[in-house]
Image (tube, rainbow over all chains, first blue to last red; front, top):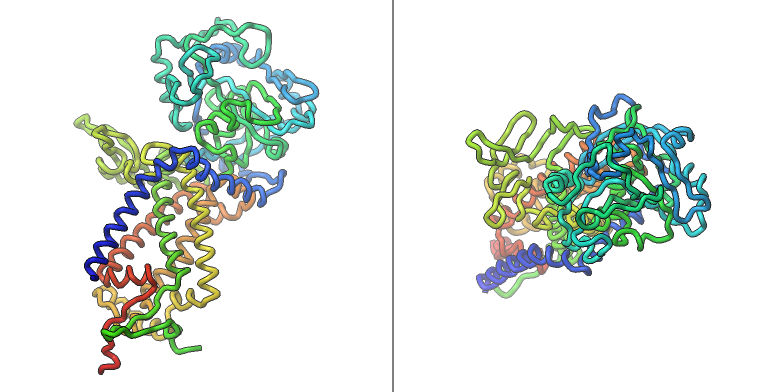
Length: 319
Length: 286
């Protein structure tokens, strides 16, 4: 009797263990599984926003705590031709576009942005991978830029369009088939893997490769009237991110052009990088070219609000 | 107050003369098994998250060149790849398990091997989803357990050593080390070592785990800067979170071993049905 029960218990425990571990990955692979798992992160956003107000600031640190090296992650040297030509002229041709649901679309040069009142803050950058660096950021509060443009009443999100290609989709440009569903030539799995992806990219014959300074600028960000060149292979997917007005109007949310008192290096996102200090590193979009105000994130990328968000990461990155 | 609150638990004697007592109320049993499953998922998804940056630091930020602990891989002198754990200035070859392991016959460079992580493959985004959902379950389950434990008096009965237990602490340690387990009426209560261990786990380690986890969140840090400061900075909080996970694993290993050697069937029956056998009624036959 006891022996029988013992066997039953052991078998039951073994079965449960196998079912749990094997079944977990299967469960997470289904859409319903993903939605169930997301409940935890939805709760994170809800509770965190109960704990703070729109103007709650992230901690600021003394100068003595600034990290000697601010680890560049994700894209560190965009191979995109248009970006290379901006770099070649030390961003003197750079214009930030502010458009979408605004009263007055703006086109601002770096000099224009530097002429606006600046904010400097020493904050900790927390990567989703787990590491942290402290840096001093100077830039123009996003709120000031948005007030200058004037929001239309429907505007709910600020979307940041960036210069760096992270992924090249197979197939003709605008094909749109199987976005992010394994159709890409290569795809990083987390921010730290982007560098490896670039090595593969550089090795690909049909990619234009990093352009030289003499290459003509290309219109990628809705400025100028140059017609886009045909892309050598597929469609480039450039980085994009978004935040809501709750974070957009926080005093610490800035478009930073200086890091540690010097112009932002390319590896850290020159010429302009978003700082949203209450969230993780992947929200801090680098190489920001355009701020688009939208009502819904449905039309952005695959609809989750950002490059990494469309690849399974949370839109709310407060934890 | 009764001399020993444990005596309040229902007790019965079956036809074979065996004494039974109702050791674990339903809420405690449910909380125990939910906790076991939740901790397993948290551990495995936690190792997945750790793998995204397999190094630990102390303080607010990462000192990338001098981690307190790192699990990496490198090339040995003979040209073969090996897994390496670095703690301070000491290195350990951990090929096959940590840093470098095999998956389907091929060498993979990853800190914790696929069989230990959730999901099995490298997937930080899904690992985080598992981790946060189950962190909520841990907190809710823990809150129910604590609330019930406080109101019913079970918490005090289970976790706080009685006066005589404290006076005989030395003897209790010796009994424990000799794997001599109490029988009869004395088996109705946990011994002093058990109580203190559960006390440290329930009111120390598990809450510290949750708080250290929260201290890593930039959102929580903005709302409650004192919490991250309490742990000595975000990277310290991450290291403490990792160390606490190790201590919980250690607890579970010792716990399971002791469950086995002190009577697997009786213990399991107790935690599944609630009823625990105190053995033949020698005391009344005496």
